[in-house]
Image (cartoon, rainbow, N blue to C red; front, side, top):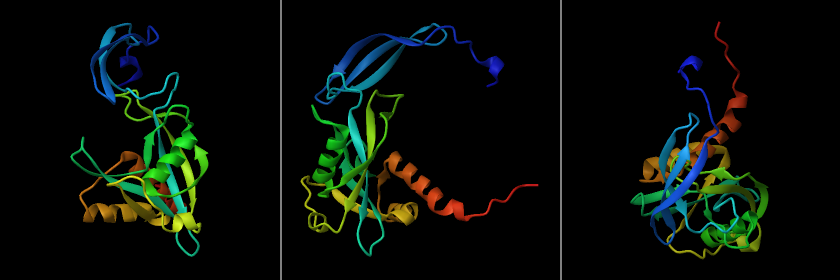
Length: 215
C-alpha cells in the first residue's frame, strides 16, 4: 500500500467501553468497543487474565536461564510439558504468573525453582512486553538468570512440579540441537524459544562470515 492509499489519521484511537461476555477461573472474554484512527467505532473480542494484580502492568514472567558448569558448555534450560489447549507437548522457557506483592525478579526465581529445581541469580530484566496483542492484553517480562551448576544445590536439582521435564540445550548450538529434537519428538516450540534460537545462531555464526556484495 502506497502512502497515498493509506487512510488519513483523523483521531487518536481509544477504548470506549469493555463489556464482559464470559468468565472462568483464570480467563475472561470481553467485547472491547474502541474508536479507530479514522474515527470509526469498532468492537474487538478480547481475552484477559483474571489473575492480574491491582494496578499491575504485567501478568507474568518468562525465564531465560543459562546453566554454567566447569568443564561443560553453557546450556539453556527449557521445560517440556503437556499443554491442553494444543493437545500436545510444548517446549518452552520456564514461566509463570506474578503473585500478589511479588516483583518480576522474585517471581522468576520462584518459578525457576519450582519448575526446574535450579537456584539462580537474576542478571537482566526486559521492559513489559506483550504476548499476543491481537487476542489478549496479556503481558510478560523476560528475566535473564545465570545458574551456577557447580553449587551443590544445582548439581542434582529437585523439582517441585510434577509432569514437567527439564531439557538442556547447548547455547552455542542452540538452534541446531533444537531442530534435531524436533525431528525426534512431536513437539510445538514456543515462538519465544525459536526466535531466541535464531538470534543465537546469528550471534554465534554470522560475524564469522565475510559479506559478499552484489555488483
